[in-house]
Image 1 (cartoon, one colour):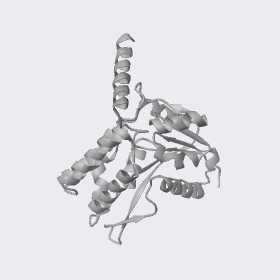
Image 2 (cartoon, one colour):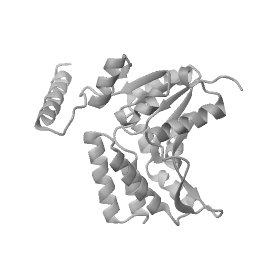
Image 3 (cartoon, helix red, strand yellow):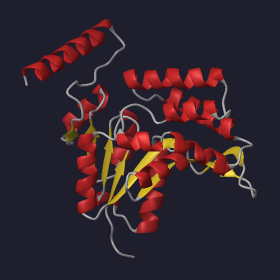
Length: 252
């Protein structure tokens, strides 16, 4: 099996701003997969993700709601939800990260999007963006192609992402010590530590500190660094950063 190097990319907050589960939830609501209560919960979680990043509890809640929502539905109907927003998500890929994707493509690396979002959506987005592979959390189907409400394989979050990466490495001959991983969140430390070339992307404060201490490269995708929003001090810093960025744009 020929040696191949891969670059693994987290999706939410890394390749795209915000969470892919927000447009997914909106499309699922419009098509009758979820009710207004679950839609509002997903929108609230999406806002919390934008402000504070991922947490174990919120990620598990989103996973469980998605599994409950798709249970009893045909896989092809769920996959069709992507028709309503995949192109928009592809267009939202950050310019700095598009450059990184193009660099790895030119180098002949496999570009793998790996996310806790449903694998059907992640795979569609990856291929629509011209990338080699997209893998997410996979729901089980019965012999008729109907979702059962259970998982196949790991929840693609934290150590679950590493399990998926290791499986791909075994299948395709990747040497993880030669591979790259990109993420914005400390929740992806297992993913970043699993490869020889971890890269932080517009990181949340905890990951920024870790990257600084370990000498990891940082890709800046915004002129406004992320800050903790759990205190008045964090909110003040956010306001100052935004004001400063606006001033720099005016003076440029």
